[in-house]
Length: 594
Image: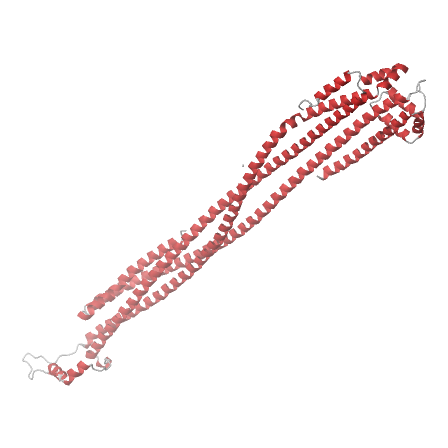
């Protein structure tokens, strides 16, 4: 645009210089012709005036004059003879009028060329301005798209950070779970060994403690380790299963011909005044100029409107393509976000299910622990009671008497009625005389009871050991359960936060896509209307655009013919005078008439 403006300024300066020179010639000729026609006084004034130099320059510069005519004009202006011939005023007037017509044509051609150059420059600047506006709009759209992509990148980076953090947490959870599983396996092996030893001791003790009241309790107590072991095994399988669940995751002939024929007919008549004919010629030239101006205006309108419509069609197509590309991209983005949301919701559901299963398992383990502790405590009390009972008989010093308790009302009544004395009589009555087979008093087997009591103490210690192990395992299982709950809560909170972020991104993309779809529909409708308008313009303007040059050249030819006829009519008398005075002048006049 800067280069075009510079060239236009240079062309304008050249046009002003050339048109100023031509206007000076025309002004001098317009002043000289009336002066010569007035007579010799005006001629002397003209020859002595300042315009003589301008006329000499005009005569020297004219390329349409013959050398004889140029010398005649220069000699007339200087007041000298040309080869013994003194130029006449009438002859010079004809030459000057011819010069005036030529310079008028040159000035008109220069002005037409300048007007066309100005129109071309304006069209160029308008096209470049539209191009700049289109590029500016494209820059704005792409800048906005860059901003949207920047936001998307930041969102994706945040998602990546959350996913990496979740991965680190999952790896940490896996490491802790693997470590716990290894520890559990070692504990299981140790418990299997301990229970094997314990079973041997229990089978040996059953023979000693084969009491009807204690038998059912001991069976429940000492068979529970095997049941506990089965539950521990199922616990490992359930934990492994929970871990696996967590890790899934586009010109007619001139109409004035009749006037020309009428003009020809008028000229064929011998009684017609030439002034009327000249007036008719002027009117016909004016009509031709008016028609040509109408065609030029219509042509300019057609070119401007068609160019504008074509530019708008291109711009609308480009906007539609951009909108379609953006809609497709947002569709893919929405599909990706929906898949990610589905995966997050599935992960949360599986995590909640795993947490529920772990909670149920923890409750079951705690119930088993409570039952084991209750049974072992009851067994210890029973063994202690058995040991105390043995000590009462074999080791009275180690016997611990039960605390006294108040008698119930029934017991008090029974006592008051002598029930206790009857019982004592039944318990302490003995035969007065010893039988003949009596071998002596009964001797206590104190040495044998030592092993039984030691075995009872061993069983108590085994029960204490089992209770200690159960308490340790319960604390470890509770700690692992709490850690699992913390890790699960943290992972769930991150997944919920990610869902919120993705839901927001999804809503924003859906809103933008709906707006872009509406814009695409409106732009498509505008494109169809613009194409229809372009077709109407072509139907209206194509014939004129194709035949404009032909119509213009035909009018120009007719205009030139009319002007030449007018010039012949205007200079008829002078040509006759020149023919009587000099053969050369007559030849020149006849050439002009022809």
